[in-house]
Length: 202
Image (cartoon, rainbow, N blue to C red; front, side, top):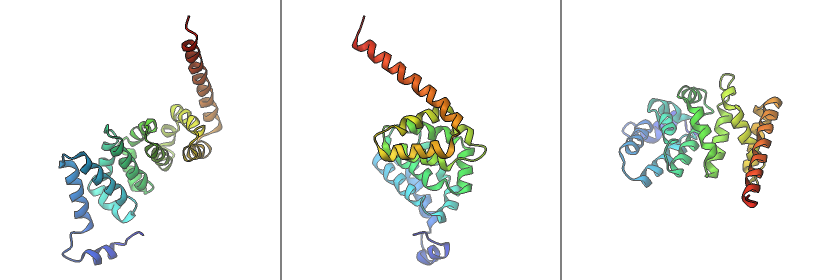
């Protein structure tokens, strides 16, 4: 359930730690901490706070969206999963979306599509859809991304295939899909030839 500022003030009281101070303490602990498990727990907590729009003003003030974007470059799959989850939760808000787009967020989110972590990929696809604007759409629906969605659409995983199909149907033109299908078929043919050469060496 979302909280109002009045509710939070009533809950914390005049001498309570306050939501902004608490989030600041989490950010500081994340940046200064040495424990990988501790960082994962903190990032997971911050991602959960991203569900509630009452926190978005604090997120921007404390640069938590930038923290999420930086964490997408980490080598730890769980850190990336929590970071993209946080962005996915927060990016429907227009101001948050602007922050992500202005900080070159699209390209680091696109990189998440190649993650072996299913939750990361699902969050990345959803985030890309939420980040679509008139200006950002060409970058989000570039040929490599559309071809990637075609592959996901054929996946046995129903969550993945359904989400990829929504992306293709709602955000891509027929011309984009057709061009990606041609590339997709070429890649399939190349892979088949490579496999054939392995099976029947000269």
